[in-house]
Figure: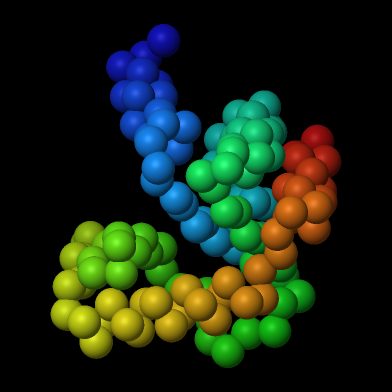
Length: 133
């Protein structure tokens, strides 16, 4: 096992231990991007199916057909409603200004409202696995 895989596995233990809670939203298009070989993609998608069953995880998939108020956003992570990390092509940005954090909280809330959860989300992931071939 490579050092990178070991490091990822060590970091992933946080979703299984402690009282942490994670709300994750993923665009359906992300499920379909071919980053790596088919078997790697299928394994990654299968991993999503397994982690979404964990009590610490709320996984929502934003369907292609969801009504949108805005175009897809850059990747962002909200920490305890006080800090947001934003990933762009050229930089990682840390937002701590309350007004900026509030903007990302509002965007997350809007996206959360149109996301699919539970059986519907599993169905979208399963369809993406089938599409990998």
